[in-house]
Amino acid sequence: MSGAIAQAPHESQRSLDERLRHTLRSVFGHTHLRIGQAQVIERVMAGLPTLAVMPTGAGKSLCYQLPAVVLPGRTVVVSPLIALMKDQCDKLQRQGIAAIQVHSALNAAELAQAELAIKDGSAHIVLTTPERLCDPAFIQRLRAHPVRLVAVDEAHCISQWGHDFRPAFLEIGPALQALGQPSVLALTATAGDDVARDIMKHLRIPRSGLIDTGAYRENLHFAVEQMVDEKERLRRVAQFAQQTPGCGIVYAATVKIAQ
Image (cartoon, rainbow, N blue to C red; front, side, top):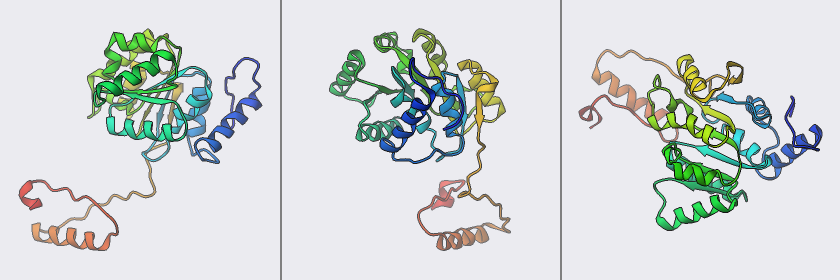
């Protein structure tokens, strides 16, 4: 890793870099970081507010998971997607990381166990929904132990310019203040200029904190083919499906056309 990274007292830069590299290999099974990941992680380790705009599959989750393992204190991950949260939590636990999830899909026993882990400090990473951060009692539980980092996944949901706007995301800013202003990392694969500015405004991220690696993905291809009529369109769809290996999705304008 390159660049300046804030270090714990009495810990040299070289020692911290070694600890990051060792954790990257031993816990996450990677030998190197992808484009953009190193820049984001360096800012997170330095406690600098950051917005990371990176394409799907670029490894955004590692940008907070690696620092969360190395940094002292608790990391709170805010996500609007319960299924994704569950997958991440299960994977972190398999890797030996003390992670718990708090959301509406938990039963009473699971929720009680998660709340106990928050209260006694054993939960090093807490994955939750933005709606939970609207609950003063939940914020109070989190405050029992220092929160070092708040990672906001799918951060475009905070912007009213975005198609996935979710009002509860607007409560993240006040929640950060209630938690003692921990450093914040916002992550998204979907942010034009207006959405990026909205995210940075609500989460108080300076323009210098934007790391945008672009949306290009070499495994995606977009093209437009003009057809003379509906019959020709259906013939082309069938031909394309036969020529393309693996699974796929065909979108149709109406149920009738799909049938």
